[in-house]
Image 1 (cartoon, rainbow, N blue to C red):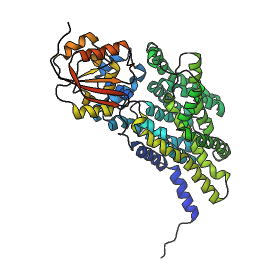
Image 2 (cartoon, rainbow, N blue to C red; image 1 turned 90 degrees about the horizontal axis):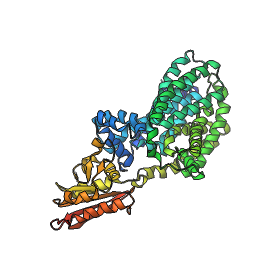
Image 3 (tube, rainbow, N blue to C red; image 1 turned 90 degrees about the vertical axis):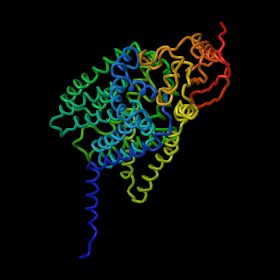
Image 4 (cartoon, rainbow, N blue to C red; image 1 turned 30 degrees about the vertical axis):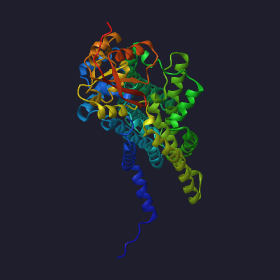
Amino acid sequence: MVATADPPRDATARGARWLAGPTTPLACAALTLAVSLVGIRTPSLWLDEAATISMTTRSYGDMLRVFPHLDLVHALYYLLMKPWVAVFGTGALSLRLPSVLAMAAAAAGVAVVGRRCLGPTAGLAAGLVWAVAPQTSRWAQEARSYAMTAAVAVLATYLLVRALDRDERRPWRWFAAYSPAVALLGLLHLHGILLLAAHGMTLLVTRPKAGAWLRWLVSAAAAATPPVVLALAAQDQKSQVKWLPRPSWDVAWTQLQFLAGDRALVAPVVALALLGVVASVRGRASLPHRTATLPAVALPWAVVPTALLLLASGLGDPVFYYRYTTYCLPSVALLAGAGLAGIPAFVRHPAARATLVVAAAAALVGPSIRVHDYIRRQDSRPDDMLAAADAVRAHARPGDAVVYLAGSVRWSAAAYPDVFGRLRDLGMRTDPVADASLKGRDLLPRELPPRLARVDRVWLMDHRSLQPHKPVIVRREGAVWSAGPWRQAGIWTYRGGRLVLLERTGPYRSSR
């Protein structure tokens, strides 16, 4: 018997079953995982990630002593990361891997949300857009809470979509899960609680029955309570964000570029998002049982949190920074994916349809390649502490000392504790753990020379955050030189700072 090909309708049916099955979200998650892992070790760990290392390598008791006066808003992230660090260590790959896994989980969730709101093809397209988006890789390669907020926001949105489904007989089950998901999002990052405002707008647009409104309001109130308590407790720590900029057109433009992925991606992403809105409205009839359309879910998610943060920053103290809205990025993938999936509905000719889809995909992927390359280079990070660590690793000797010109330099050096921990920190009065801080406490400049009197080699280290002509910095550096005579055995300038190695050339003679 000669084998024959399956009829085209069978192939189409198999394709539909594949798109509607679990393979699609898993494939999107796998692609996200693969893309995000490329070059993950190359950029150095930097100041923010050094805070993660410093906090998670302490005991729980020592960690909890910090939160009453510092980093309370990041407490949950540190508590979640501590057991991970205890098992896998503080290397760049191990420290950033939880963020990679979170972004992979978000990819699967984006595909599922897109499928429920518009259909299998839109779900696949949205998941693929998320997988190859530059911002996905950027925050997957950061040992902070941003990737986790994206994953939890996707989960909360999926639960809401399920709860609003007209065919759902027990919506309260989904709302019961929705409430802790939103609370978790707000505890991971306080700004995440604004997803509730976006979801409220979704309900206004979809106009569900009164019962759904009541269940959502109860769930939202329960979800908001823990983050609100956290926000009130952290009021005294507002000085940590005093550097945030005032709202301006430049800030708004930067935010648009952030959501799109890059300046070159703004036009194609906005065009596809608009096309996705139109395609979603036209495709509504094919999903009559759904309550929440894709635009009703994704547009408020993309716009409302940013608008509220900018408004609050204009009326009071600045609270907005682009990376604080990482949890809004999945909405852009949903809209762009809907646009890609909707192209065939506007073009009848198969060849023209295929050409347009390929051209649209190329408009996204082409500029993204350059951005992907950039975020995997060292100049995409403010600090190159790896270069400093490499210099110390290559040239340090047993007994070497180090003097950090300020506590922020010590904090930065915590990015590579296995290297800088070998040096004797002679400028420190109280270490960060005992001080319940990230910087510790320094000796006064006049106390340094006696400490350095019997030291033959000392490393002097500064940081980009220091003002070189600030009197205390000048006095501190002068105090080190006065403990000589020294010769400069090496100078290493790197992104974010400078290292100088001094070797003694004679006995120390006190000026007193």
